[in-house]
Image 1 (spheres, helix red, strand yellow):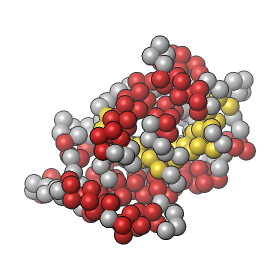
Image 2 (cartoon, helix red, strand yellow):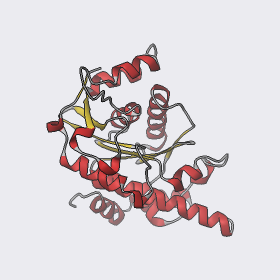
Image 3 (tube, helix red, strand yellow):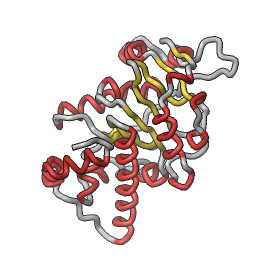
Length: 256
């Protein structure tokens, strides 16, 4: 798998998105947590390991051969040690390497059809995916904008970051698409965090923000009583309504 450093291949929009998501005031990541990516000219541009999102520069991203990474993801003989070696940028004096969670982004692109991906560890999300009832808490939306912006999330039990997690995310996205007719916009990672999938930087930022609000709403609802979820079928119908589809497109930075 080819990984190279090429600041000229890093879109300004990716750096800007990373800085916004990495803002400490938003509590989406801490220190060097999380990563962002986009597909450019058939390659995956992804944040380098150890780089802080709130200080992101073009030099903090690397370019990954997307097809080669997908082959590693789908190769049952591949090992974590082999993946770790393949993520390194060849002959780089700074020792840069693609994020260990690169295959999560590859899964989102290949299985989920995303062209922009944001993986974060919001405190509100991590708290709710780190309890026994975590998956059940997301059985249906609690409020209309959750249904419209986030939709029905996919769930992944805890897996070690790297090859195991990338494979689990790919399976979850594929199963979700087969079951519901479309890939998810949100993947929840047990004891870990979340992944927002989209077709624009605005879309993954909107999904991230609304997912965090949904998590905080659940925590508040459980603290004061028994949450009353929206009917799952009704939530899906609302999200499919023409006016809501148009509003979701505008939030994603698209014209309608």
